[in-house]
Image 1 (cartoon, one colour):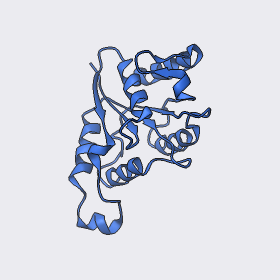
Image 2 (tube, rainbow, N blue to C red):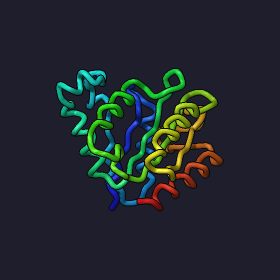
Image 3 (tube, rainbow, N blue to C red):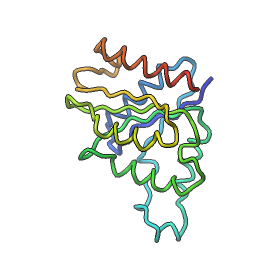
Image 4 (tube, helix red, strand yellow):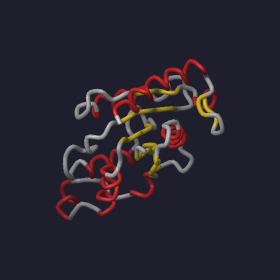
Length: 175
């Protein structure tokens, strides 16, 4: 039974990316899903000065969740074409702990938004950065979330669902 860590890279309490990440994890047969909420890992904004004072316990807790996983699913919210501050800050803190940053685990990167591009800009940015450590990370963007996703059915557009399933199968094959 694979242990999957999944989270929406957003601090929104009603994050559509958290919902998409959870949906993706729930599509893996017999998976033990650990859904993280970035709000549980709020820390001071990273700086080298703050690092000299010590790495926050919450960074160690987040990293421990990654270490205990067999795979990681992240769905990125897009803020002005980039990562959310909440995600970037956690990323900065855990990058100061042992390498590799994402513990060498297989990853599946997602993004969604209510717009027609489906947060593709941040997904491309995330894929470019995270694939340095793992060149074979599958990715999927869900455009127009409100038209293509429901909480009870998941992805409702058949073409997009097939694209998602292909990317998910790539991730599962790496577990």
